[in-house]
Length: 121
Image 1 (cartoon, rainbow, N blue to C red):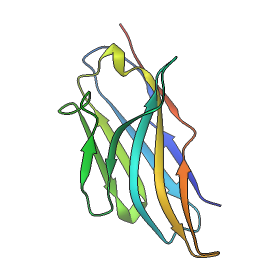
Image 2 (cartoon, rainbow, N blue to C red; image 1 turned 45 degrees about the vertical axis):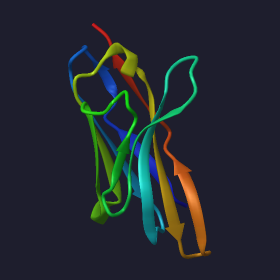
Image 3 (cartoon, rainbow, N blue to C red; image 1 turned 180 degrees about the vertical axis):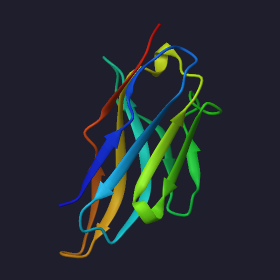
Image 4 (tube, rainbow, N blue to C red; image 1 turned 180 degrees about the horizontal axis):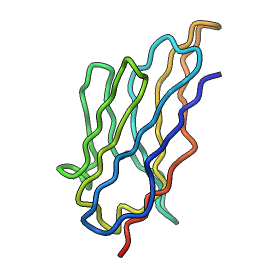
């Protein structure tokens, strides 16, 4: 069984920083793209940032220059460094990964359980 476990959410004041982590575990052969999505109350889930295995990244326009996505392939872990946080960044943040397993040979799209980020004074 493959799973993603997120950590690092919490309450932070506007202008503050948080770092989210997401670790994959299980019988993993390889992980392609990993990403972070978020869903605010009453809104649809949206892509925040994504990173390929080779390190290519893309970001939502709303977080460019403030958020940085990175990954450690040896640890099957992806990170999201969030700086200059704004109240509109408040949401549940979800990790997502494209995972290849061998037994049986299969391509999976896996989601984490979500971690709440609240930006408020």
